[in-house]
Image (cartoon, rainbow, N blue to C red; front, side):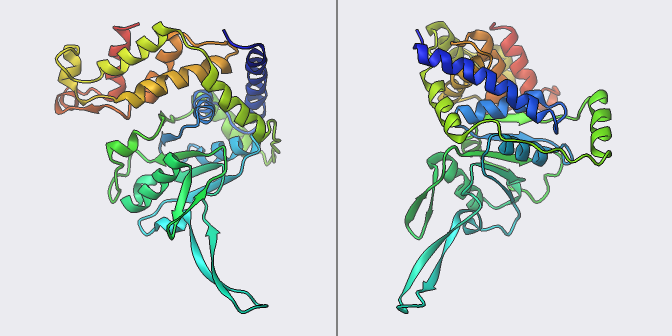
Length: 328
């Protein structure tokens, strides 16, 4: 059973999330699911890959979230000529004007912030991608053999354009696995687009206010780890991840349509995401429906569809839909 203090924190988080959505609504129209998943990613101390065409206000959304959460925001435009030191920082030789002594001084790069927008991560070479992914995994960067810790909380939101693939450097599967979620950001509905046009052409400058402290976010991150989970929920998450693997025990459509399935990290993120979703909704423990809600964002980038799937016009989400339908 959760402790009394933790139950109070769950209620505090539910109230805080309601205020966050209310404040974001002043500037962001729609995208409720994306915002939900960004908050879950942050609470789980994970990172997310956001797939969407240009012009869908990804930068505005992420910058607004950072402002409301009172976190430092940094946007890095990934280009073919971007070097690892351009994002991590570099050492310069500095001379003391009084003593004349020279020494190296580390100048922090744009990774030294709380929320990082890694724009078009697949447009930069693997060496720079690896520097970012090391920071994501270790919460630190290395320069001249010396490690420098990054501030907490630390959240990387990396974007990719699904249309323009020429001249890009696709992330290898092992690196994709480092992202907790893969999120698809879609076009707004007709009603939402009407509201967007009205608000962006009226000349109103909306001011957003911070509604939560950094210290509270760190407390909520710790809370997620303490949320109890029933054995049947854990067993369901492990079963769902295992069923994506095209082995002799997998359903026929899995062996037909998938070349590779999700690893154990998927099971971990299914449970962590379910925990965060539950407490954001004000519930002290998750159930199987919370795991189901996490299935697509956690699994879609961890499975590799086969030539048969391509020939049948089946994508990763459709495979997961069928898998979930047969196992709920």
